[in-house]
Length: 136
Ligand SMILES: Nc1nc2c([nH]c(=O)n2[C@@H]2O[C@H](COP(=O)(O)OP(=O)(O)OP(=O)(O)O)[C@@H](O)[C@H]2O)c(=O)[nH]1
Ligand SMILES: [Mg+2]
Image 1 (cartoon, rainbow, N blue to C red):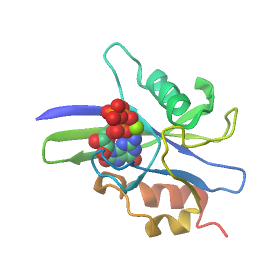
Image 2: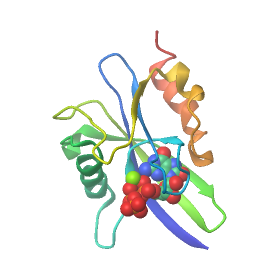
Image 3: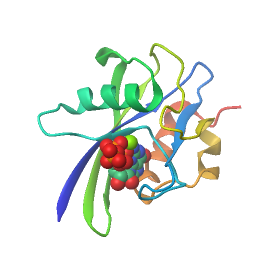
Image 4: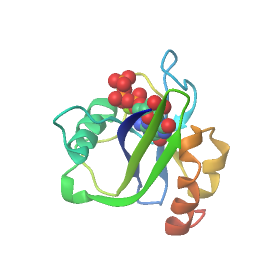
């Protein structure tokens, strides 16, 4: 089965909230909430990919030292195997906006379960809860 490498970020704001973005209609898994990021292209390092995707999707500038490895998702979808490293990022330039028309939500970790996410993402929720607490 095809292995797909996707680089994703948990952007965390000063209040400990995590950014989720809604997958636009028309894409696979439309309507589900996910961590911003995307597929690593040939010749690209995963960190470079993530910085590119965050600029394209959200209009923010992230410097590589501000990305810290946090966890990863590994999930068997029907047509591919997903491997998705997740970085945590607490510092960036600019204000995140849905540059591709997608909705954004800043979510306290205790409320992440209220947002339907792709099945691959579910094991990442307790990781964020452990690190950040439920929030208030
Ligand atoms: N970005 C992202 N993708 C995820 C997550 N969870 C998850 O299963 N995926 C899957 O990983 C793949 C990456 O998708 P993507 O649509 O973000 O890739 P991309 O930004 O390069 O978009 P494109 O391929 O439409 O150009 C999709 O199959 C998506 O469903 C997640 O939390 N964040
Ligand atoms: Mg994407």
